[in-house]
Length: 101
Image 1 (cartoon, helix red, strand yellow):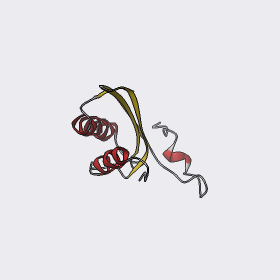
Image 2 (cartoon, helix red, strand yellow):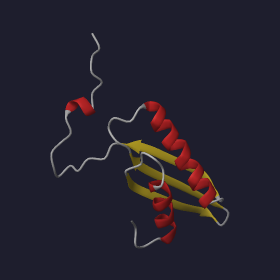
Image 3 (spheres, helix red, strand yellow):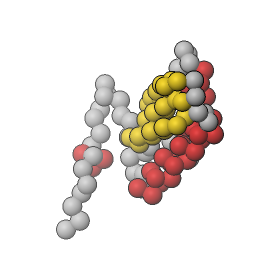
Image 4 (cartoon, helix red, strand yellow):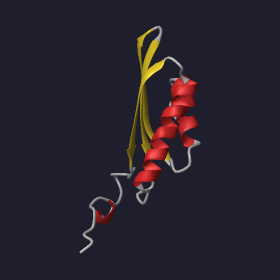
């Protein structure tokens, strides 16, 4: 969590409450003016998450941010699968759609 911005900490904590979100990779809050903010968040989901579960997690993330920051006029949530690039790379089965022939 960010030590610099309490609002970012609140967003991260709210997103981590969502079923399936295993990590918040980053949150960005941009003040456009006194009445408008833009919020971007990148969330990590397990590699075996279905598209339906991804859609639900993204929608719930957007709703949590809307409730937390009513002046957030534009909210962007990007799903991802986090991996530590300093360790072992994920297998290609996590990246490539396998053939069903």
